[in-house]
Image (cartoon, rainbow, N blue to C red; front, top):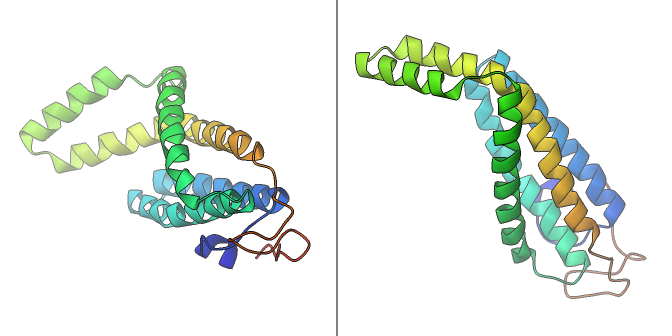
Length: 169
């Protein structure tokens, strides 16, 4: 569990990819649960943010770089998410203009029940594009991270691969 809970230390490329796959799948499951069970379950997704930061910081550490480089990845992720969300949501057939009109009308009437129904319908219509966008963005970030080569020597973040703990969980 330390892999997902602390940004301290180093991880090699294979451990990084295993962690990324686990977090991407957990994120997809949370999205589906939030869509079909309860929107409140979407808050669980906030709990994965720290784990994403921790594994990326450790991967930067393995290249003898500061975990603060993670801020650049956040910018890349935000841009990627916006671009691919826009492209893929159009494929879902969801009419954002109509949705916004109906939300505006329900808001002006104070119809909270209708607002919740509209949000639920929007989530269901866009769940597949959302999951695809998440996996595309994860792949882009993973591609960037795969450019980082392991520093074979001990560095200020921990021992080199021979002495590094690559325990997965």
